[in-house]
Length: 114
Image (cartoon, rainbow, N blue to C red; front, side, top):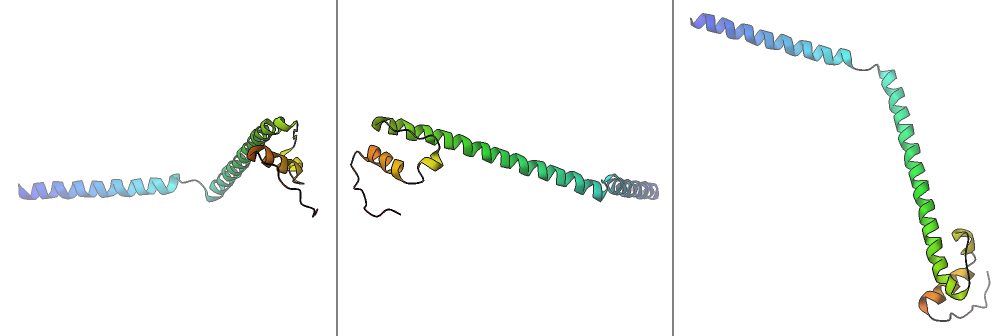
């Protein structure tokens, strides 16, 4: 009886090993071709990068518009307005007016002009 049980256990172990080998073989055979994977992966990466860039650009535009509205809401007190945040604040004149409005103080004009 013991040898029958041992034989049965041995057969069961062999079956499990064969199933494991078959499973491992199936995994190797079902993998994508390396070139196909690289092409799809690079397309996915390209799409992801372009999407991230588009979202970053959109976010920057929204922030620029929001800050421009905020600046204009304060400059309205002195009857001034900007249309392009970067261009209109570049020379510093509107920026000085904004600082005067925010601080409530008159800033001295510097004689040195760059």
